[in-house]
Amino acid sequence: MKIKILPTDQIYKEVADVFSNLITSKEYPILGLATGSTPVGVYNELIKRYQEGKLSFKNVTSFNLDEYVGLDGNHDQSYRYFMNHHLFNHVDIDKNKTFVPLGIGDIKDNAKKYDLMIDAAGGIDLQILGIGSDGHIAFNEPGTPFDALTHEAELTEMTIKDNARFFESIGDVPTRAITMGLASIMKARKIVLIALGKNKVDAITRLLNGEVSLDLPVSVLNTHQDVTIYLDKETFGYLEK
Ligand code: PGA
Image 1 (tube, rainbow, N blue to C red):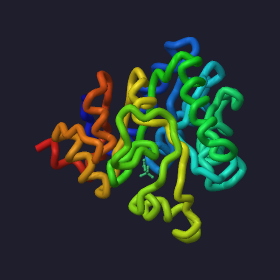
Image 2 (image 1 turned 180 degrees about the horizontal axis):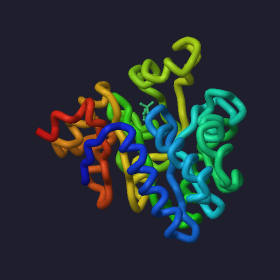
Image 3 (image 1 turned 135 degrees about the horizontal axis):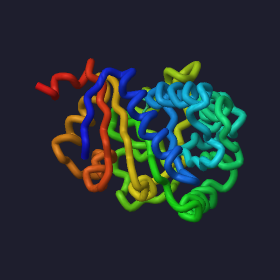
């Protein structure tokens, strides 16, 4: 596992570089994308590069990590809406090749098909991840088996509280989600995880201590071959000393 401690702006640029390098070097790149506040700076950087004519997404396929159960893609709190708004509407990606798990209809069936679709596309080349304050990645909350594929998950109270800031009231936060599982994420050939801010310190400390336990879903990454963790210098600078 590689660890990079950098100012936040530089993290966005470096991670955008990793994406750009893949997109310009591979004929049909497969991206694993995430929602939440953390990746937005990376998406802004990628949009800028597209606008400057340095990057084209026309051969890109993307798979997102998760979606709230019960929200369709037109709902302004759905993750499909988030992705359109923060990235897809601003670049030349073919929206038919952007996939977000479906949070409506038969969730079990949607979940089963999602892993099959990722595999059929050739698997994810580069997966970007944020991390929850409880150590979740995507909506894999503590206790999720490491061999889980895409599935329906119940959000923890901590996650509901963390996400309430995006909703009018905490009662509006969906309590269930469809999420790629830890095993689905581990199939990605390369993973970059970004952690920004003090509420991530506990989970990151445990991860860097080498813990591998179901209590800390992100700790599965300690068993992956190609992971880079980006930590903001303002919060994690003390680790350099
Ligand atoms: P955040 O969420 O980027 O909004 O902090 C991260 C996560 O819950 O995975």
